[in-house]
Image: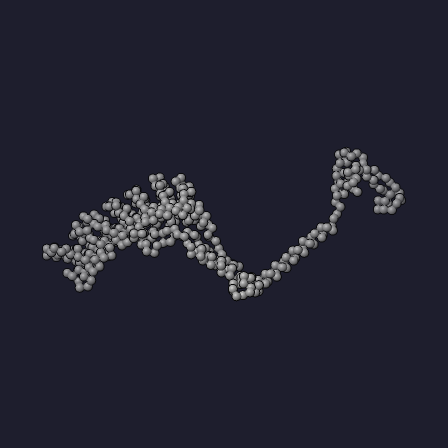
Length: 434
């Protein structure tokens, strides 16, 4: 019954290939021999039982036969910490998962790789019928929703994973089965709302804020003292439901004595560009960024961190710009002096600037000279017009007297015609005319 290769039995091979009739025959032969060692519990070199093999290759009929044959066996994990239940959940093998849960008297829910339970595996993977798989597992054992996955410094729960992936339907399903699972925290002491904000999952944020019983999530601080509003201020997103929430403390301080407004202003101030004549345009990234943990298998280990390296790059770029424009050689007698004059483009700029300044000064001088020379005595015309207006209204009376003289004195054309006009104007007008 044993294979010489990898310690596999014939049942392992038949289960993996999906030969249902062969599996039935092998199970019957073992039963006829009344052996104490059940073939269904035998493992190969990888620690897999025949049920592991059947689930991996997704042969449902074989799975049913093996589970029915040894329903009291818990089918423990293999060397990779994978149980048949975990494999069924991870691969989305819904029917096999239901059969194991219903037929096995004591199926194991031992943590698999990265301490992930079958529930974690189902939430992480995206398969059709995923919500049904989760419902079946929570109906079997609700405590799975509270168990953390990941390493000691990167623990997370099923609802954190769903919030990270932006799976709104999964979150609703988890909350329907276990309403208090929203109070669970990850290793950074963050709730599901923290994670949704960090991952820019606006739909999840709105769903969580839509429940009145979860409004306490808004003002809960994480291990760094950051509330979801602090993280939201660094994200640059716009979700009015969070900003205008009555529980959102806009003046709360984190452990770095920063309010959400401080973080928002800091992010805006550090987003700038440095360049010279348009040839280079390098943008300094935000002061706060989300740095995923490369060792995190769940993908939720995002933290808000200070990007000091971006500030260093910007400072070095600015310093390089200054050094190129000034003499930096300590042995040179011109140390610290501007050396741009050596460049042809800079010389052309200086000459053009001097010419434009000269023409501007000449234009202003010409304007003033012309204004001083061209002065027409307009005040006499003004006085005359004022007089005519007043005379029409009878304020001054008959002030105009005309004398006609023939051939008296030289003068204008009027004198030649013998006509002279003499004004009898009041004193203040007479002075103006003079």
